[in-house]
Length: 72
Image 1 (cartoon, rainbow, N blue to C red):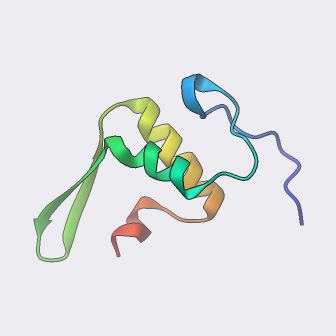
Image 2: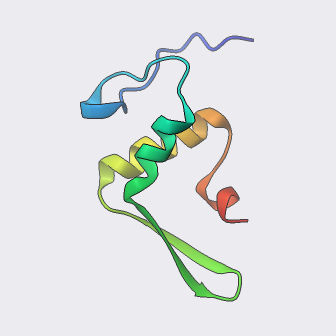
Image 3: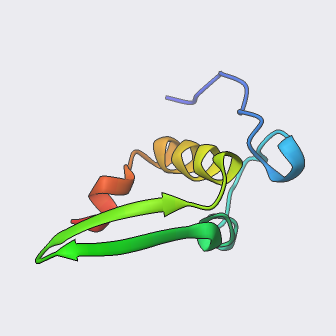
């Protein structure tokens, strides 16, 4: 089933996302994201700014993945 909702405005400079996102776009968006090891098998993550956090979390949501799942 195809999603009929408009794409969110979390692209570069607040532009609407384009269909057919690439891994390159996601990796570029995640450049300002840091993973910190707190202990054995325990991590936390930090974004450099709120726009980066919104962009990455929206992209992962569209993919059906969370940041926590990436850490598992």
